[in-house]
Image (cartoon, rainbow, N blue to C red):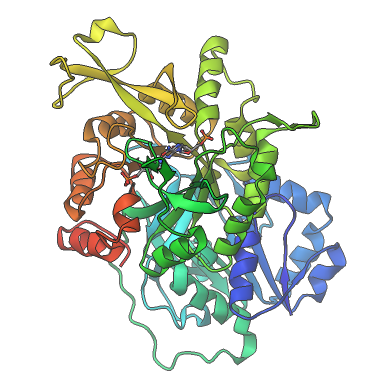
Length: 529
Ligand code: 1PR
């Protein structure tokens, strides 16, 4: 019997889906006594350390959990489920952890590397472990801003380490208590194999040979993301579409490039590191009434085991009966349906306008509310900028760049104007300010589109991407304009972005994802094979 410790503080649908896909059934922990009845316990902690510990305390779970662990019974902690085993965390000073493992959880330094540590990294397995018996050295998916520090006091727990600016504990194990910082449920087939080792229990055979320990440093891969712009076509079906500079119609019809779930599954099988769905007309419809979109997410998350992001329509809304919904209600529905991250477009621009007037955070924005419940890493900001050319930087208060692509009248400078409603309305906010303020408000990642480049195949807008990436300390995804494999190498060589996204070339099968990865690998750029 596999028991899941879901304390109701976030999104655990992904782990449920992964376990079901492996043919195991799950029992939910519903009251403290259920913990001691568990045969194998999975704790996929989500959100912040403090919130998780407080919830465990409020539900009366702390004592039975300590007792379960003290008896050395089978446990798999994931992410916060690893961190909770330690004495405390810098994320939530004063909140004690379970104290099973000596040491504290620390924050990654905000420096040259983006925080959160987000994406696919290697793990250096330092000793024999049944959990890693089928592991063949693949990269696994991490997303966290805090890490467990290896110390002399916790040496007997140390199982695997990963490097990100410094070395941290990516897996711990003693007896039948194991915990991992990465997300096996989002780590494609390598993660599923690892989960199966835990779920399989006593009959899992131990390896006959001891794996040799590879001591070389580990590396975070550049991510390749497939994006599916989804909307209803004129026949009323939800289809994947694709625009040229955001115009998705051809001869009056919405372009139909395929079915969302089938396409997402194809990209997963072809090696996409993440899948993004953008519900591109959600700004005018109410996503909570858009059952087909939620179903697409549900069905995709049952068969795609890499991170899923969904954007479109995340904002406060009043329905036809006058009932009010918050942006958090909309995000909740997306997370419940299987999203790992949500992406906010139009509402982020309005949040920045409000912040500019107030000059401070006040907790009222969707970004702050969603980040508080689901964590910063779950909140992506999708920026839809368009170039505005000027003769001199003094002509505008906005952040300008001197451009190698002059304007129609030979202007040598431009700024990047943010738009809302899918490019239909320009606002007095530039992309650099938007990214900076959204980071302050608690966003964990930027998805940086370009209306000028979208669908053109002319390559990413490197000037825009460099300007935004240099302004923030969170990961940035470069988007719009990819036309060939060389464009991906170009964006990773010329800027520090963590990921690159494309749509049209993948949908039209012009460039397979594996061709992009093979090219990057040959150029010495780190990728997940
Ligand atoms: O404003 O919070 O409701 O979110 C709406 C979301 O829908 C935003 O993320 C916005 O970017 C997106 N969106 C709205 N209208 C369109 C459109 O195309 N008419 N799609 C649209 C934006 C941009 C990219 C695209 C890349 C790569 N799509 O994600 O996939 O440009 O394309 P390429 O590789 O073919 O060049 P809200």
